[in-house]
Image 1 (cartoon, rainbow, N blue to C red):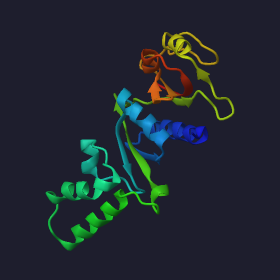
Image 2: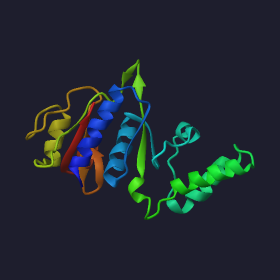
Image 3: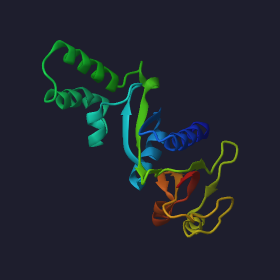
Length: 197
């Protein structure tokens, strides 16, 4: 787990939301994917899609359906484009390019991106601030009673409590990345990753 790359993602998402971008991309890793799915679950992001270097198709963005695994990506994309496109050679060439980009191979695994749809409410970004709690040289791990104190708004160790409405704290546990309130419910401790509000 690279906290350096996660700190880059935190600053990128914060800057993208302040710049009022509707769609942005970050490198695709398991940690980034799990944090982005948690951000979507908590309501900070509208869509999370895997893709290549170019942005995904707008029809995929509106549905919010994630792309399937590599084994069924070809049939999924062909079925999605079958009803909307005519049978011209240009459309078939475009579809082949889309299928080739969506399929993960050993050659293109380094170019995979996560495409994130950012949310705005009353012309203000929903994700206004995202910062790291654990640093690469100072990793902070807490037990579930200490995480419970943070959820209730009190300080535990070096971590301040959750005091703002809608504020979330993400924790890396042995069961994946969870939000702090889920850790308290499941009685799991872990390493503090980042906090979002």
